[in-house]
Amino acid sequence: MKNVTDVPATNPPNSARPLSPFLIYKWRYTMALSFLNRVTGCALTVGMLLFVYWLVAVSSGSEAYATAQHVFAHPLAKVLLVLFSYAFFYHLLAGVRHLVWDTGHGLERRSAQLSGWIAFLGSIVLTAFFWFLILHGPRGAA
Amino acid sequence: MSLRSPLGQVEGLGAAKEGVHHWWVQRMTSVALVLLTLWFVASLVHLSSFEYSVVHAWLAKSVNAVLMLLLATVAIYHSQLGVQVIVEDYVNHHGAKLAVLILINFIHLLLAAAAAFAILRVGFGASI
Picture (cartoon, each protein chain N blue to C red):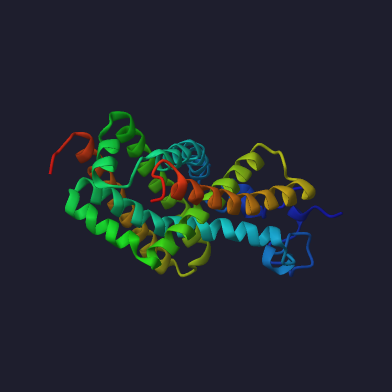
């Protein structure tokens, strides 16, 4: 095969240079999972606004904290908190998956698909477990 | 076989025109956040209540204040790094990209300063 470095960069795409990924990739769930990692990362960035608001409320006295508690008790806020917690657990597991990949392990198709399922299902299980502990933990029937 | 263009080979810099610093700090913050976030989740589960006095007393402890300071700053740094990559990937117009990146950085710095001030305020025992 002709060395690609011999081909002028202006050549039409009959050279051996790779095409952009979106031109050749078929949609697969592993792609969706990769995308979900970014989506959950973005969600966590938004969720961090609530996290910092909570910290500021704690530091601003009992009245400000009571206001924050009122905000977090809103049904919409509760739904958001559950979604943020899911985003956190998925991003955590997917992040560990990426760190393992960075060591050069788990990149084969089979193991990458398996770890994808573990991250996806594991994050749902962890979210459910977390809220079970929050609702039935040391606070009793809070 | 090299897939680099001739110009790319001569310059030897890659498309990013820089080294691995961004990649590396994103990984380092990831590793730190695995530990810090698990500590935070465990702490939330173990808090006896989410009432003001309990949460304030918990955060006022030196260990918790220091770890919370680390969690907040590292998480915000990690967020800035991640959002930056997404903006660089999807915002194509150069001017818009620069404007969004500046905005993103300012928001993250503001969040970091607010979080750090709040934690230190509780940690140093300012009674309100």
